[in-house]
Length: 235
Image (tube, rainbow, N blue to C red; front, side):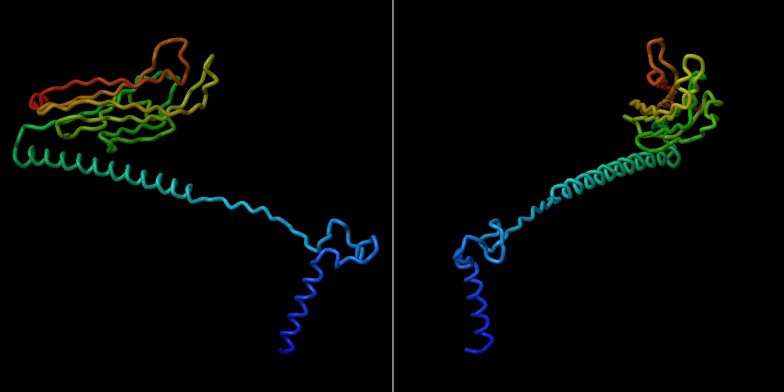
């Protein structure tokens, strides 16, 4: 047996001897080397409480949300492409082939809000596609009470018009508390464009009546649809 192996065996024997109760004590009542009774046995265990947070589920949920968002954006783009193809086909029939069939839409912005409100921005979307947008916090949008915002060919069938507004309050008298108050108004309108017709859609911004209505509830968006024959409108 080599010297290093004998040293290892000797060290192991000493450790075993120190770990056996009674062998590490003398014949008296006292503790060896002044050790306290709490340390009797020669072994002190320290428990370290470590909490590991499992983020696997959170990461999977976040990935799922992002994937759903991307899917919704792709579907929106597909719908816009479909609408664009239908519009191009209609234009081809009208311009190249000289066909009188098809539909057209004319959109009007009409502002009948009182001086309590200032229109800071307005945007219109036809079938999810932006057709008009303007922003001016200085109030130039209030100067024009009626404006044609879009005139173009659309495929016959169902269509959806969405209006987004940002309004600012002009407080005075009992309404002084609304001074500088800004809020958003959103509204949608579905209509059917018939083949061979022009759909004139007037979007009216006005105020609901009633003293009990709050400042935020008063702004209102209404729609007026008037369809005329395509040839009559051109004449």
